[in-house]
Length: 354
Image (cartoon, rainbow, N blue to C red; front, side):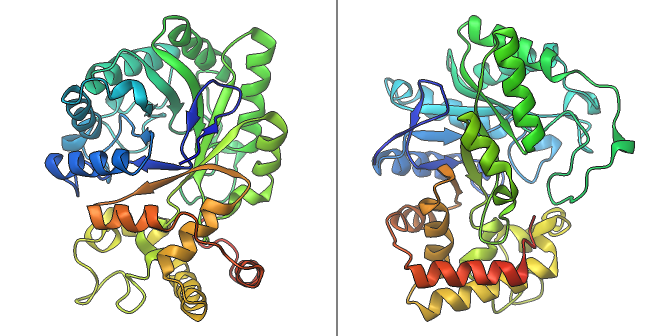
C-alpha cells in the first residue's frame, strides 16, 4: 500500500489508518491484538488512539485502549519502528470528571503530563503524531452547529498549547503534532503561531467525514490545502449507519443489531448518530449502492478513499471480518454517474450527521 506524507512532517502513512477506540469496550484485548496483527499483515502502518479511549467514554475504561496497544507492541519486538503511532490528549472535560478532575481547560502542563502518561501506557519512547483531541475554545463540534461568542471563556491560549507541544518535540517525545475536531480558524491560527514563533507546525487535522458528514467541504478543505495540512477522516461509516446494518431494523427495537454501537449504547444514540435524519440519509445511500452493484460499506469507504481532500481514512472495527471488508473496499472505483448521484443526494439531504 503506497504511503502518503503528512503535512510538512517526515511522517509517511498508508491511506488507511486503523482506529482503535473500540478496544477495551466492545473489543477485548485478545481480539484487539488479532485485529492489530491482521491490519499490519495487510499493509497498514498507521494506528490511531487516544488517552480518552475506549468509547463510549467511561471512568472504568479511561486509558484502556492505550494499555492494550502498549501490551501488543511490547510483545512484538522490532515492530514499533515500522509503524506510525498517533494518539491524542483530551481537550477540556466534556462531562467527564475522570479526565483531569473535570477541568474545563487544557493547559501546557496538562499536555506534557498527558503525553508522558501515553508514552508509558503505549510502552514506547516516542509518539509519531500527537494531537489535541478537541479545541479549548467553545466551538461547534460533535454534532453542534453554531458558534456562540457568549460561550467564550478564559482558557489556555493556542500559543501556550503550542509551546508545550514544542517542548515535547524538542525532548524527542513527539515527532509531529496535529489537531482534531478543529475549525478553519483554529487550523489557520495554529499554523500562524507556529510560523511566527518557530514552533511545531501542525501536520494534520482529524475531523469527522463521511457521506452524511461532509462539513470538510464547506471551507475547511481550502484552508488545509493552502496551508499544506493533511486531513484524516474519522467515522467514515458513521458509527455503522453507512454499512446498511440498521436499514431494516432502525437503531432501536427488538430487531436492531444488539452488539452494534448505536443500538448497544444509549449514550451514542444521544449523539448525532442517533438522530432520525442520519438514518434516513443512510438508507438513501444504501439504495444508491445497491442500484450500482455495491454494498453500503463499499460505497461509503470508496467515497472517502478516493477524495483528494483525504490523506488517510480512519476505520474502526470490532472483528477481523469487518477489518477485511473495510480494507477490501480500497480500490473500489466509483463511476462519474455514482459520484454525481452522491452529490445530488447531498444537495437534497445536506449533512445530517454534521
